[in-house]
Length: 349
Ligand SMILES: *Cc1c(COP(=O)(O)O)cnc(C)c1O
Image (tube, rainbow, N blue to C red):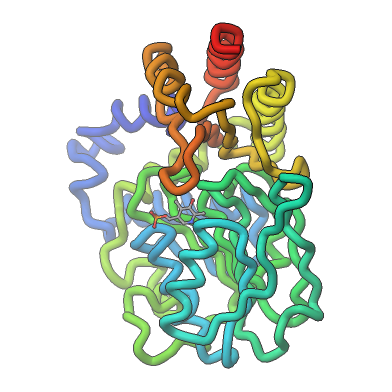
């Protein structure tokens, strides 16, 4: 979901942006109006996440997977390999892509303890000092696993994929070498990715890095080396303003906790639904659960669809159900889902 207020504003401005008689999609990205909007979006994002001055904020093409390639290419010359935490399907894909450009080491894997998925702690001793970077995925969207602590990596910069939980809570940007996120979960429409990268990491790109993905070139051109995804950037800017009007990420984090708690309590108290992620690593964005037997799945999905509850089918690789409750999902949506789940459980117990 995108916030309703943002969609209404975009609709109002669709044909006539800032009184120009044209859509924001139809004007030059080099016009002073567009540049002012783009800079204000960057400024709002910097404020929301308290991004320190020694970090560049880039608005890039190519979504999350674009960064699966851009990160290893841009950091390749910093070391002879890269270290990874493997926690689910997105970190697995990131490793496979990075492996095209440098040697990859998996330092730890998710483990199952008493039937619950658990992420082992990472200490600097596990990270190779010659590693170009250490990468992990802060929220495994498919598996419903979220890592709230920041792993220890010594002097090796941490690169994190925050595609599905960026802006859901405050983070200490200074602990990271780079943060990236595809836009389409908490930022805006697809096609855009946001990269927050520390200044001292801009000089390690392999020479073959495509120019439009080269962090230093992008930074030098204010993310306008080539035409940026202008409409996505504009909508992201509206979402940042909406977040500020909500009281920023502290306040959205509180709402996200309330929403997730409602759903996990519904699951845990049901004696019917099961979530098998250790409580410390349960995602607040993507809540996964299974029904007592898979034969009930189709009936659950059809019934929930009729009740106006969309997109609850789990990812095809893991099955079961998944409720994605990103920032823009109002608590009413979660309450409607828990009500449906209780009714369904009562009828099928
Ligand atoms: C959605 C997602 C991606 C991939 O995003 P694309 O824009 O489709 O490439 C990568 N990582 C995570 C954690 C995601 O949730």
